Amino acid sequence: MYLSRVRELASLINHSLWLEVKEQAKLTERQNSSPRDKERWCPPTQGTVKCNVHVNWRNKSLQCGGAWMTRVHTGNVLFHGRDAFTPSTSRLATELRGIIWVLQSANDLHLHTVSIASDHSETIEAISTPGSWPRFHCLLEKIGALCSLFSSVAFEVEGAHANTVARDIAKSVLKDGRFQSYLALGGPAWLHQRIAAEASRQDKFIFPLRLCLCPFPVLLQQ
Image 1: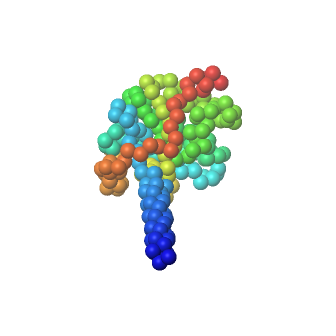
Image 2 (image 1 turned 60 degrees about the vertical axis):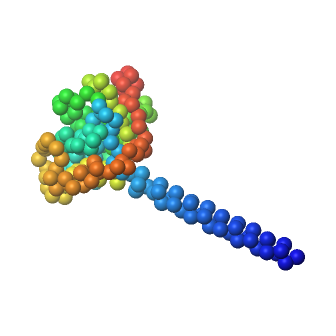
Image 3 (image 1 turned 135 degrees about the horizontal axis):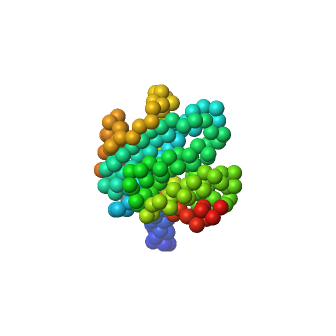
């Protein structure tokens, strides 16, 4: 009787320890897959130039600030640009104007294989399914025409935390009154340390939230 009770108690202790270990494993898994970890900047594949873009839209009556920055698979910056946009009726219209600006710039710089990364998921959705967004037909058609100038164009949704460099440059347009358009080699000096940190991360090979190819036929047939 005593031996049976000892075995039963040992079994309960083992089960309790197993549950504790299981809960700890779940907690560790949740911590390792936190949104911030998943939102680190993701480099492009070798041979592709990745262009992070952000447009800082506030409301339909104010100017907007836009910025983009191109990087290769090593994280090294090729170019970055900044500009101010006239007011737009909606954020999506402004974001699409920003994509047009990026594609025009990339074509002028003779970049042939590019991936455009935006933290505005609705923009990528509109480019992926242009027929569902008739209000923005003209802007989407222009994006399709520009895409046809490249060997390959892809669009991806990037988390806001992974897009902070482009976001901060875009915000500086209105915040610091930097309304003059410019294009420069490399990245801005005031963000050098953050750019270098993103490039040096050993665990940076994280898939983007969503990736889609530019649907040329759909856009050009509208």
